[in-house]
Image (cartoon, rainbow, N blue to C red; front, side):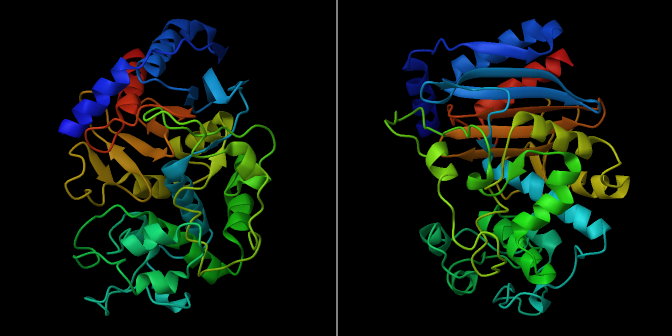
Length: 380
């Protein structure tokens, strides 16, 4: 707690940036847009794109600050959305499930070339539902952290420190590795690259400008830069990533493709609104699938009293910021802070992507995201 207070104090001591903003859609919401801009400045945001959408699509669209040094955020700027990717992955899984391609409760050991089973519960099958609700007994151990970017086989990581102290179904421990294994399982089951599955079953049907590989993105991809401590170079260099083609990206590889589905999805604001619209009402997915995604299945162990876990979703029930339960996901990586949250009762949703902002948070939800949600909810 003392480190949180110190971080917030240091952020406040930094000069508040006076960056330009533009309201691309929603002239009637200019007052609300100015509140959002004040929040971005308060949290020392470098650049951002924010949208409010309903069942009819995006109706308010604000851009603020810089995507890269000397390059302002534009309406079509693409962001690496970090853990918002888990929401994308869950939508893809539910679509494939509806099409009869996969089962949420199928034993994944039947398709993978290695076992996901917990060493303390070798008789318990690991399923997509368990992976997407962080209840599979898989965690982000030291071996996983050290393996990022090195293509260490998943089979090797699972034999090291990648299992929790509790058995599958006995607790909820947030795991990037666990959700990353969803891509591996889909590739092993369907024989196609995860990127191809996402394009065929999700991105193209919804008209989304999105990919799990930056080199496939056209136009400007935003950097991500930590605001404190200040950085001379971005922690995520959008231009470099766009010009780096990963070998084997277009072929299924269930051993090494665990760094996609948990955090590597890239998209712009309009695409996020298209995804959110599809998750607000039945049509692309059935009501049964939407209700399954919105149903509380677990609570992150000691992490956040206002959050519960659905299938690839966070369920936010915090009277301090929202009137009704919201569902969606947050993403924080390389100094960037992102989110998509939706309110089924009003049929509206909020998306916010940044190129860097204060990452202060008491529990899981970032301060900047709580403030943006509160401003949106007060308006709606």
